[in-house]
Image (cartoon, rainbow, N blue to C red):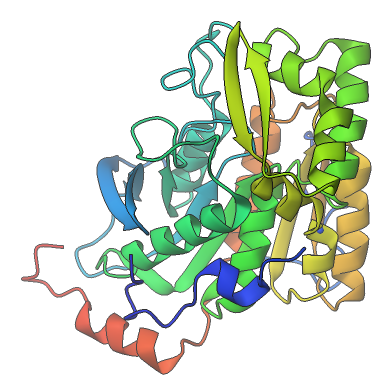
Length: 371
């Protein structure tokens, strides 16, 4: 799909080449520092509209949910793109049991992180888009065959698709990501001047190679998420997977719930050689980070390192450490509210490049537009 600005963005593989890091009760480690104070925002418990959307992403179509808080007819809402973590997940941030039912243990009927975050942002007057990654939920494609650059391009296409929506303010845009979704969020924000704020929950900082090793060891020790066949399989074969990636092998076949699954190793190699901490040195945006101290996928030290690097790069990041929180901040509603507070307060209006100014003018809401 060409983006809404007529194709002004290159595909991700064109930028990077083929080679290759003040909540209160939430248990905040570092809150807003001096000079970081923002006015408190009143939470508006308002009706919201949830609209099913589909958009083109390269050769496939992705499906998502656009959440729109109630607004006056000519108002344009700040909005955020919400991105899930690495393994197959739905738009809600839950494990993808629809397309990969044998990969994951039965659901406990909990609402996924991104669905909860969308609701929290809507209460603060912020719209959001979340979508099923390729090969997950009702989106086209195959998760096993996808790579990192394709996922970056998909997220950029999602932003492009939303830039034609009259309800959304192009000048007040944010990206929020869980886990390895941080790679996508920072890759996009660095090159898109309209992105004003970035929110990260449980992000890695170092190479995904190191994060995978550390996480596999922690999960083997604690049993966290080992009820899922795909997690058990990947953890058991983590060192072999790393060796194969380092030998530049193209594929690796693993067995999940008795069935062979062939993984495209290009995406893993790209993630190994694209640490979030390296991207952070190029980012100059408002950044909010939340990290559970019992995260089994990325240790809270990853966010401490990321905060330090962002600060050295001239940013003023907010780090919220959630005592006892897991990777998805389940059972941590106050922590998620604190994160939504901090992120929504930092979605500041940005100057737009001329092509987006033109799109903004074309789609300006009017009283008789029906928007």
